[in-house]
Image 1 (cartoon, rainbow, N blue to C red):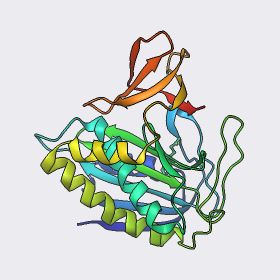
Image 2 (image 1 turned 90 degrees about the vertical axis):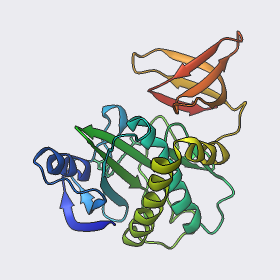
Image 3 (image 1 turned 180 degrees about the vertical axis):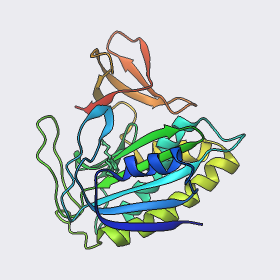
Length: 237
Ligand SMILES: O=C(O)CCCC[C@@H]1SC[C@@H]2NC(=O)N[C@@H]21
């Protein structure tokens, strides 16, 4: 079961659901969607520009005993959003997942996902460029509208709620396997050249090899060594 609250404006839908969870008002499957955010947050401490017209929504997932590791919900969120966006695009041939959970269309960033843990809760926040896309210094961006899609933020969110519930149930019942398999199918192909920026500021240049069983990115560097990346950003070259 899912339930959606909608507000015209808030600071950050992720921050709001974190407060709900912390204050004892957590509800599995609760969604909060805002038309705009005044303090939208991205990964790695970045801000997320949030003008009216795009999708800003977060949901609460309650962890249960026996669930796969909580960080692998990043891949569950990614495959659910990819499936939702794929259905909305007139032509999804150039749609790809980029580790861990960005969606790229023709190499340009279309969306972002931010996961935050509060006790037994995980807040999953989705930002999708529906009508607008920001100008960013270090990466190309695009929007659904620019790609000819006609869905609005409210429709996308209700479809995403159903798709996420489906993939969350598979993750809980069958483990990470089917989710990881879908992720690999919809991501950049093995051998893709990339640059990895690590949380400590370090960088690796290499080729994407696969996802490991825990959802980490496996790279092969030019000297043949293997590296496993658990956090940070990657840039496809
Ligand atoms: O950096 C990224 O790629 C992740 C961006 C996540 C943005 C969404 S918008 C809805 C939710 N509320 C936030 O403050 N952030 C997430």
